[in-house]
Length: 313
Image (cartoon, rainbow, N blue to C red; front, top):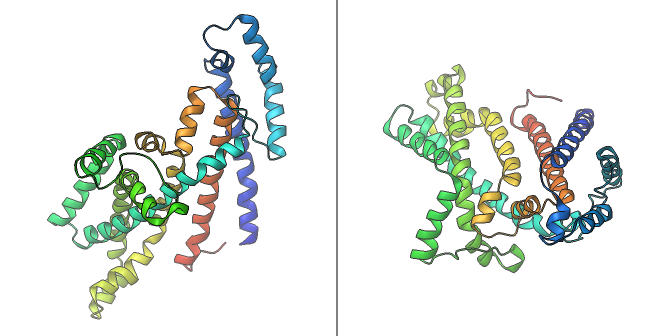
C-alpha cells in the first residue's frame, strides 16, 4: 500500500503543476489591472506604472511565473497585492469556518441521505420510492441561494429560531456554533442529500438483485440484516466515492452559501480576491482546493479495501 500511496503522490505533482500553470495564465490573460484597483479612479499613468513595478507586474509573464514557482518550491504562496498580508495567513484565518461548515454539511447529508436511499431501494417502485426521488429532483433543481433565502425568511425572520447571518467557531461553544451553522448546513445539504440518496438507492438496487441476497432471504435472515449488513456494505464503494467527491467540492463550492449567510470563510475570501484582482490570493486558494481534492480522492481510494477485502493495493 505504501508503494501505491507514493505513486499517487508523485502522480499528483504534474497535476498540480498543470493547475498552477493554467490558473496563472488565465489570470494574466483576462482583462483587469490590479494596479488600477489599488490606485483608484484618479490615478495618473505614472502612478499606475509605479504600482505595477512595485508589484512585479511589469515583468514578462514567463518571468512572473518562474518567480511564483520558485516561491511555491519554498512553501511561500506569496503576499496579497491588496492587504500586503501573506496568503498563507489569509487562508489560515478563513479555513476554519469553511472546514467546519463542510464537515457539518457532510455529516448532516449522510445522516439524511443514506436512510432515504435505503428506504427508496427497499420500497422500490412504490409511492415512497417516487416521493424520495421527487425530493431528490427538487434538491437538484432549486438553486442554493433560493433555498438559503427561504430558510432565512422562515426560520430566522418569521420564527426567530436562528440568527439571520454570521458564524461562530466551536471554540466559542457548541450552542452558538450549532445555532449559526444550522441554516447554512441545511442549505448546502439540499444538494448533497439528493446526490447521495440517489447513489445509495441505485447501488442498493444493483446489490439486492444478487444471488447471495436471494439466498440470505431464502434462509429467513431478517430484512434489516439483509439490507444493512449484506447489501449496504457491499454497495458502499460508489456511495463512498460520491461522499468523498462531494466533500472536496464542498470546500471549493461554498462561495454562494458563505455570501448569503455572511460567513468569513474561503468562499468569501476568493470572491473578494477575484473582485480586487488579487492574483496571489486567487492562485493560492485554487492550488489549496486542488490539493484538498487530490488528497480526499486518495483517502477514498485507500478506504475501498476496508469496505471490500477483495481490493488490494
